[in-house]
Image (cartoon, rainbow, N blue to C red):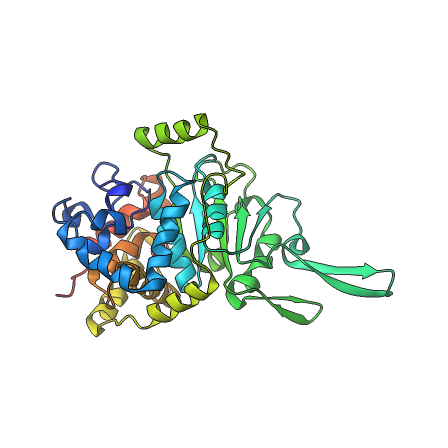
Length: 374
């Protein structure tokens, strides 16, 4: 099941010959059996099971606006629909995203296009070994005219902060983001300064190059709501990328590419209120807990998912259900978000790493073994 064939799958291989499905092979639905809530709004309109999604989107202005955002971002970014959806889920939940992909898969372009479509401010910081904490959060600067120190805001004072190659800066600078990510504020000289709302961090890291990098500590990884894998495009998608560039597409000029603001902070706030109203049955709550507890007992894991991870899985499943046009969460919603929500919160044992075990494979086995509520 390809990335474009479903509503939310990210680009990490590991199931049934490298497909991008978040389900184990035995549970992956076929194209004909695929639930409506696993399809995008545009695909769902083409088949009867998707009629509920399309109708619901038309009747809810906030949902329609956010679904329109995906269409706008698609004018600039090809083949990353799942990542765009993940970013929208993060904004709906007020969480942060760790984007993993090789250079050149449009991570920066995606964030810029998303902020343009949502009328949000965005700033980019290139993390380097000599980057200081004050370069991110801001610092006190002496003003000779007033003979006093004034606070100069850092790039963290924005709506979407792109932390490019976050693992290339030392732990001291990485830690400077912890307060901003958790408390939505920055404390300098004993004074706490609130960050704009909404605020999320979209951090990137290269999955294959580790020389000169500083792995993120577990405490900081746990602050990321989702870890999304951005794959290389397929052949048809790459042809489309090249075609757009041959016709004059300029990634630095999104307005020329036709990307327009279709939503804003007001629509996002309304959407967050709607997501908070999505109901979760007691059986679904128990299912989330069973999945999380199973990661703590998995022989391949030396570190399982914490209660914060269970809460994150609940919130993201709610957001995904709402985007899919429903006011209740199903087990499939939990499965769809389990990998991007949990994969960075677990740690493989050294012997499992030596055997080539992949985190997503273990999580897939857990999802296949935990009883699903009926």
